[in-house]
Length: 166
Image (cartoon, rainbow, N blue to C red; front, side, top):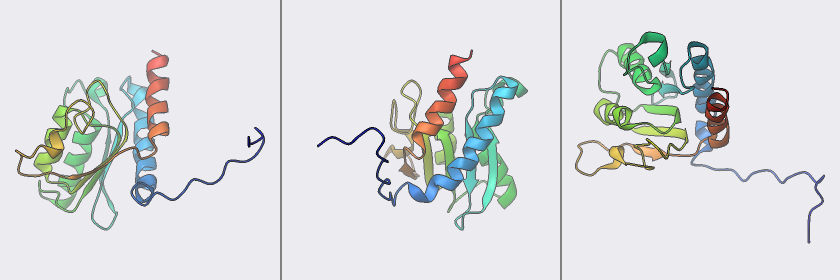
């Protein structure tokens, strides 16, 4: 039996793994949306405390600042560490629109965040499962939980539009 094209789609089934991260991912997307104004790739990140309070946020600022380490994740981790007054971000979650690169994956491990949540995969430079899997390397002393694909289509669309317009 075929469904007529005008028929409404059934509601998506609840996803207990990803649904809790939709609101913070929307905050990360809002951060990302500001990056193209300075010529930066639209990636945004937020760090949440265990109770869900935003401790830090960031967006790519490499072009804006001339700093090669000014990735959204690194800036959000720095802001969160400043907010808590310590470099150990135990109990925290990093939510980011694009799968972190090797530099950011290293910062995630070193900051001791409990969880990393990302939207779009990065097949060319992703270091949280796509090309490499730095954060789950058993040789390292800390391995955060990883949740992938939160608002993946929205995150990917923002990046696709940016690169299409270049």
